[in-house]
Length: 372
Length: 230
Image 1 (cartoon, helix red, strand yellow):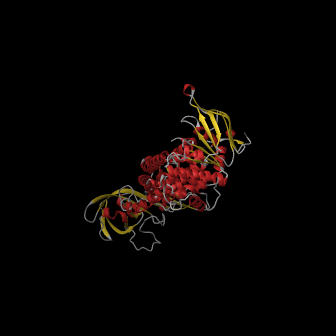
Image 2 (cartoon, rainbow over the protein chains, first blue to last red; image 1 turned 90 degrees about the horizontal axis):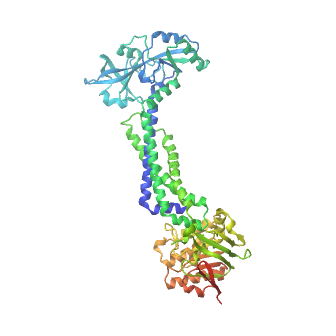
Image 3 (cartoon, rainbow over the protein chains, first blue to last red; image 1 turned 45 degrees about the vertical axis):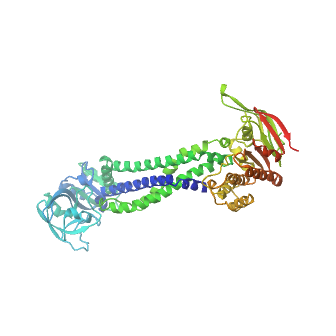
């Protein structure tokens, strides 16, 4: 397959353009893939952070960010269903935050009972070794600039109530462009002016000896006016809402597909031009007795070499770029497998791009070798 | 004819359709024995290259048969004819048709790769062939860096790779000066005498006449004259 390699190396300018085209496509696919992966994770991050088996929401709530208040009796009735061993409450509302220097800013305030989950950011978890006051307020480190907090603890105002920000946390950065603030459920209802019995979400932990679907079914029968979803169902619903119904996921996905198509066109064009320019050589090969498979392998190898080198170059460029992008888009996420798996579509892209060229090379008549 | 090593029997070939139809060969019967060098001559359009294409399994006749080693190759499929070319036939062209991105050594090694994929030490064998043809100092040169005579010797080395019994040469000396042309004539004659190959040369070059065992003259697609050279 030296001929394949030498043919593409012989025209270094064109080879560089092809490799750059593929690397651009891979860059775009991985970057957009990371945006999509991060977007999906961020869309259900707080739901996934809970340890609850079941979430009860108001009817028709599409995503965590759009909850509405449930009556206090819902929690009491849910607690009485066989299989339910524990209930917790979560609420979320937009609030006005006044920075220590007096600037105002809208924030998304989330309050939760301490038992909703070990990963759920609440200050008053009893088992936590981190010494904080029960009514402490937390924010994500990526939102530091917007919070304008110089030192901790910092005294701020939330909906004109005095609040103490005590800690920075990680991994719960702004997803809607509005920073999240986390506090205890009791504290949050106070800031929001909620009735202390109300909740936006009621989280249930169930007895493992009861089938989850059975408990869910009983809850639905007893509480027909609300939505009863497993944690996975609500997380999925939330992700689907943000990615599909808002079109944001579609836009990200379209950009990734465009990256694929750009790479496809660049590689097809270059490999095809290369094949047509060397068509006499393919005729010579066939006259020499080269089988069709041998000829096809040369064209395909050329495409795959471009694909492989382009992928490596694209990955080398995208990894630091994503690292840098994290400072601007905190929720962007590139799981280790994403860049690795992108090599597969890029090689598939190059193989696909070589189809027309392979056909041209295979169709050439060996008899043309005697033409001048 | 089927008993001859290489033969065409009553072969006719035409190109084009309806009024544009041109008859390139008409009822040609020729046989070629192993260990002979045949020179095919004739004016342009007389059917020389068409005859070479038939003998090289690159073309099938409209009528008649082509036999290679006793097998009627015109009845074979395209893939089977490819195998016949791979095992038995090599070409030498006026325009050399070397692979421009490969060195002389790699060009010859590629010939071996196609004709004898199982062979180990292909590069050593290619080097030996080039050394035999006096190209020991040009092994790593690309075709563009070689003179026309050297290019043709590389092309001959490539044609000899895999040891095919039949060599078909189309105007192999047309692009060469007198000395290089004579050198090529001697090399191909040597392949007949020393290796027993069947060599068929299509050429206008009269120098070939003293190297050939017989001369075939074509005119308007027919064999006009067939003369054994004493």
